Image (cartoon, rainbow, N blue to C red; front, top):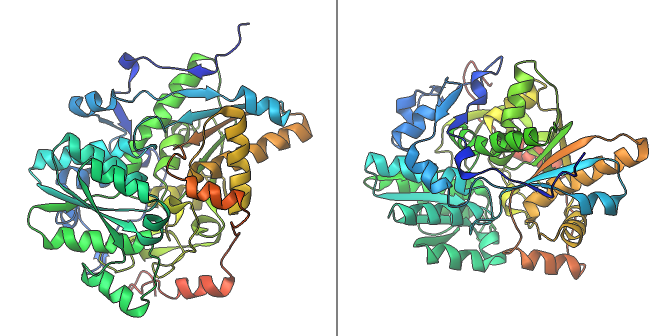
Length: 459
């Protein structure tokens, strides 16, 4: 039998023509959003002032597959289909009988999977005639991707970037501005939400929740402007399903099926995208791969959070979602994985985890994550983003278990982005200055204390 190639590719003609909606096959859909004004279930129309109408409809979609517009397919062809790699060098270095594969999403300028949803969201806003967009960004990957997509459609973009990430990753700002976006470190003095946060804590380093509040405030108060979000929402998980659809096609080409599937988890978009088609198999009873969500110990929304209704932002202007959350008032420590510093988790991912379809949430410390990142870089030649390195660390752990037991399991993980903009983090790690941190139970209780009371639903 011939050796499986190091890279398994798809042709341009094999690019998926549809996104897969996991909600269509879930035994129970995620609980409905709650309108913060009425404290009653939100309708699709309730979301129209914030998001493009077609995206709102996707948020509530019941169809199993949704057609990808031809114009979006053409934009995807600039960098998709993305490659699937067999990690032979990593396997050899670990001396494991496991077969390790990774789906690499970092080959576009944004350096991550985020462009998959950015293009779609920019397209639908342009189709509606929206003239300006606002958004938030953590590590800067989403802000970069959306600035690229907005440049494709000539849409001005204002990006509220988590302050600590803006300080740690100044070159992200340069790329965003190259594509025409405007970057504002958050919390800022440009919004009521930002000013309120700074009044309480002038040295606040920010969070995705604070940046979301500022971006939404500007969107709903500015004519013909809409907000777009890079993770968490059902629509974003839908767009990212192209990752899992391609991965499954690629593995079928070589006659492989993963026993274990691992993705890093912050808001849940890339994890949801990677597992999508394999979750379809599990939801429909065809196969039962083991799913692992790798998250930071410093922001452990799945492994230590509560499954409850919560605001998606710190300023309490978004609809409430039932999700695993640390509380919208929780401000995570200044870890380098800025894209994973979010207090909550996608309602879809949360529901799958709560109902037992997502098997495990594994919390990892910064130093073990960067140990894995540098080991991977030395063996597989790609410098991974800190977020992606969480999945790498979990994959290495599983491969080592195979070495101990002698089992030859097939492991698939998502390499969602490259670390080209994260060199300050690597310098911090190599100098021995990187600190491991996990919130105490008392600190978590402070976040849980901010969970809202909803009459008849959450007292």
